[in-house]
Image 1 (cartoon, rainbow over the protein chains, first blue to last red):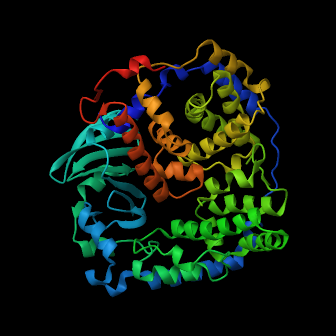
Image 2 (image 1 turned 120 degrees about the vertical axis):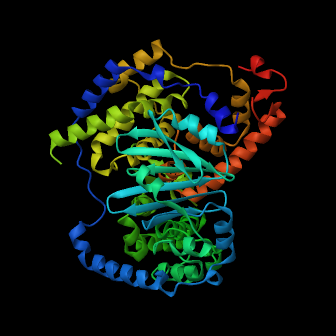
Image 3 (image 1 turned 45 degrees about the vertical axis):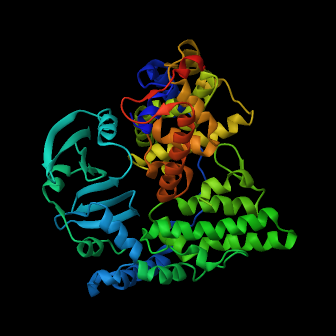
Length: 330
Length: 182
């Protein structure tokens, strides 16, 4: 029994006893009958962002040109850590489907998203855990479907819903999982490729290691670093990162530094920190990230808090000091 | 969104995730009735901020992040018993869905970990969240979550080993200390 199985078995709560249908139904209707409080949006309406949005489109195009694998770099073009990952993990591509994301990219675990039109699957490789453990877990999500032969072995399939199926199989030391709305088609098109082809398939949004310094500098172009934060601390050490995730990492390092100054500095330092944090609303990278996720929204709550009474609103007030590290990923 | 459309969406959101939120809350409170408060408050916030709740599976992380904040407030001694949660609280108090005391050693090992490590392992192992969901919930990066999970598992393994756990199948303890642990 794996460690994960052991933890699961120690869970004091099972799903089955959580059926309180009548009480749940009553609660749901009571809440839906509550008046809706219109929350004032902190951000400007979308249409006022037309100009920056155009600029972002231009920046995105530039980025595609900048990072597009048009130079068909040879393996010499890849940084050593990157090659190490590629040499260790199963290098799988799905036909000529496009890799749109590669959020994580490590020897121990990784995930990539493949898209072809409306077809989309996420592929994970995991070096910890056993296939049996993952199968046991996924068997709980829904009915098992007909297995599929893949990569010389058999993949077990489980259906979250009619159009959301996950497949699991073992490959070398890894447990591979593919989940999405076209898993059978994707499995049929699965192929193992060379290091160069695999790394070359990484999307434009994945920062190329050779370019990571330039990308981080580009993100920092309208951002002032707080005292004590050295630019070199933001280095990606050669591993590719999704542009959103890289942005979050860079912004977290900067914002956390300014918040620490606000928490620990004198009057002058605190005032400086507030000004720098308030400037976050115009940081280009946050505007870009805002289209994809909620990180900017969370940060702006902390900007408002340091400029106000030091409490973050949402439910009941939380203090900046108690929560900023967790919320921002410091 | 028109109110009727909002109500439809809210009802679907509530019905899909109510057990997730209740399970999350029950695992983290001493009194089952407090979990009812967390569920009520979490979904009340979701109702009032429905436009902020992401569509699809991403709603899970949003809801649990909200429940987490509600729980943090509750833990500061500002309980808000009564009102919306009364009925659910009453039923939970009458039928505490806490079962299986056979894994006391694992819980004792978990208790030896830092709160951060323990919470990560529980979010993954008990609440069934993926690293990406935990990252979305806690406002950090998936890669950071994976790295912290890896370290937390290593520390738990060390604690379990100290308590007599032997890895492998069938997993058993060299002795049976779990019988003596509450």
